[in-house]
Amino acid sequence: MVIVKVMGGLGNQMFQYALAKRLEYEGRETRLDYSYFSEIPTGDTVRKNFLTEYGSDIAEATEKDIKKIKGEQTFLSKILCRAGIKKRQILVENEQRFYPEVFFKDPVYLIGYWQSPDYFTGVENALRKQFNFLNRVKRREDKELLEKIRAAEHSVSIHVRGGDYLKAENAGVFGGICTKEYYGGAIKYIEESIGQCQFFVFTNDVALAEKVFPIEEGQCTIIEEDTAREAYVDLCLMSQCKYNIIANSTFSWWGAWLNEHQPQIVVAPEKWSHVREGKSLYPKSWILCDQEGHISQ
Image (cartoon, rainbow, N blue to C red):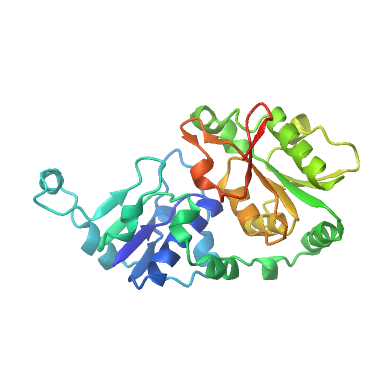
């Protein structure tokens, strides 16, 4: 049995589910552990368990399942594992890289975010089907936004993430990457590629969004995070735009990945964080832009 720990926000939960889906596809007995949401560590942003709310089709791990694999984490058991006497059945993603060993360990308890499309090669169609949130766009205001996006000839989603990214504990890792120059370079690239666009800006920080956009009046619709609108509705609206400019955020990563418009143009930050470059996270077709607004591929 393989158990994948689910934690973090919607985008991270989707990555964890995607890995579990690939493991299940390979014939592994796979379970999801949601215990994080009943005991969120102090300092972590409080998150909802979106997978069970939306209806995950992967079984939930029981306490018995978890204990069977993790065992009792005593001082002695840790020493025996380090000495190679006892087989360690927990794999922790300590580095932000691709871990091919997740496909060869069984039984194992997996702790990490698993942010790479390499973890779900072969199950892309199943994921697109599972993450089709269109039936969740029910409020009148949201349906009107969806129609406005679909009516635009060249609709472009732009994600600006402030909020928790501006906190001291996160700013040193994620801050200062999606700069005004980044957005300017990304917008210029898309407009030079397809002509004049209609931009739909998704943000949890309107003041920040207004600072970073060199966009003419009337060319932009700002869609502010709304507690009355579930996060997966915003993600769905992003995916319905023809083109995407993402932030260094798994939320807009999935919004772009779920966009099936062709030809696809996605512009992403060359650097994902100050401790990780972004190239390993992105499909090869995505366009990369650095903090100074320079485009590379």
